[in-house]
Length: 408
Image 1 (cartoon, rainbow, N blue to C red):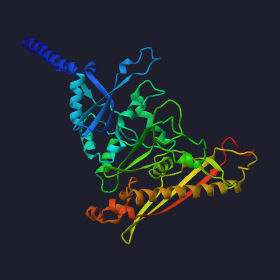
Image 2: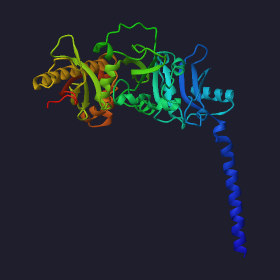
Image 3: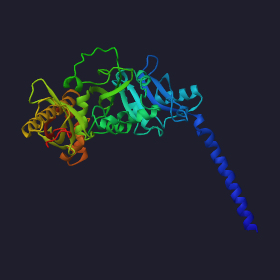
Image 4: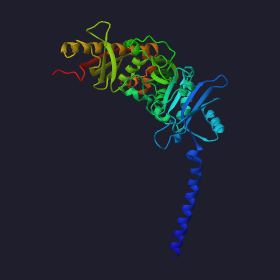
């Protein structure tokens, strides 16, 4: 009888302890007591070291009927000496505990990034609530202005928009999945350099010639595109860093080259010179057959990098009275595609090495095989020697006519 009584008392005490344990966490971590930050913007401040913008959202504001309105977002900005100090100040102002576990984007203005962002990256990556998958954006406008115009056109939640906006990199190659985890890894790496998404805001007042040749299409980038319509944020191109300092940017076709070499694009549309008609272009949809074969040798102290790419593709644009079913014509188009891709890839590589001296493609990790020890590699100083690199690019593509147009 005593054992049964003791067992009952033990169970009652255990229940009371559990109630006390969870009641406090419920009161403090309840969603009603949290402020959900979905994006952070960092700009140069005239009054303090930096101006921080916090974008909040209220997911519960979406109608339960499922049809409805976009969940509103609110942006607060303040001047602070550091990100940690800014978070502490915003906590005091709004009266709720700030939660960063749903933060999807961290945007830096171009002006701020050109001065170095190492302190901010180290602070953010050290915060347990910041996920490594959080996107890093360098805005051509102020970071606050970029966040204000980051509005989902086809989504109800801004968080969903921030999650999917970089997905187009898989089928265009005109942007990339650039997150804080990879940025931090590259920042502390001796064999590569960081990169980030290049952001901006559509400028409806920008005059545009209206021509649609391949040069205009391929050189577009954020804040310089021909897009017109509702003023929204755009993410085309890449921001290139040397260590933690912004040193340049890539346009659409250069970003595609970056994606090809890193094998981060499933397929892409490209306009190549038409071998049968001068001053004319053909639109091809090209798919990599395999990962690029990359080799790095050190010849007389200088990096020599060879890249071999294989593609298959089909013709998207068609012209009247053109015999695109002829093997001879298709071979000429394949040769034109090879020449064009070799040209843009080579130009891109020399831009990253000679003009920017930034190995964002991480060739240095492949170059390590030339050294017996890591100390030898560190002494070689790859991130400095990359500017002396020479490149040889070989492209082998097989182009066929559209899948809807075949010989009977």
